[in-house]
Length: 297
Image 1: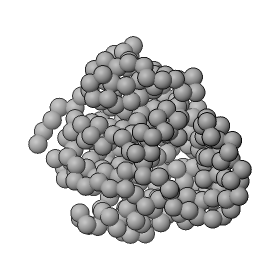
Image 2: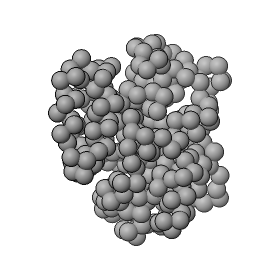
Image 3: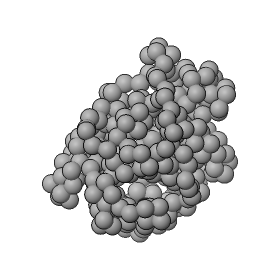
Image 4: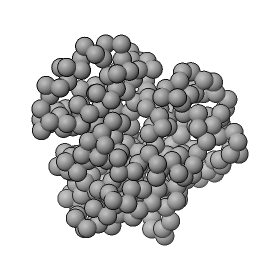
């Protein structure tokens, strides 16, 4: 099946037009001084911001991986949890074919990619943070290049591209996915893990949902929206589910304290959060995460 890939709208329109269907949108609410917009047609939500390459280097600097808040208090301390996550996803993929060559987008320090490698996959990673990419290369021996997907250049084509917790962060969504599509073999897969805007948790919390956190997060997808978007790049849905995800107590506390001040009942919960042991690994408690597997026609 052959499909023409969509072109980006003029720069001046990008912060008003829906990045999924190019239709008009409207402001829904303001969060951290950024307007969250909703498409009038497909209901996709996105931040009102002109795309800029500087977004990557500004938001995903070393503080994102070490400073807590919307990021991590100590990303390197999550090594084994993330490596296990890579292995779990590799087991999932084993139901659809043999290990091959993969590209891990937003590889950070390479822990998830290492988990895939443990399971027989060979591949590359790309990561915009130079310190994280250098760690993956020097400490794990993984070929992780310092770049964003929007700028990625290669002659390689991959059997699998993983987009685990990265698709909401692309500063130019269509450009990133166009590049990914160009480097995916016919019959190859995309594995996407992201937050589900239509989950019960997201609906109950409304604008207080923890994933409404611009400028780190720029898009909020529904499963239907992802299917619509992937179809534009010649990919069809194969499977979907809720991921098994574990986080450290320190990471959970950092995220909760960052978000609780925004909730009406935050001051009541905050003292209870402090009792959580830093080294305790806990399952992610909500149901607002989703994984989806797509195949290129």
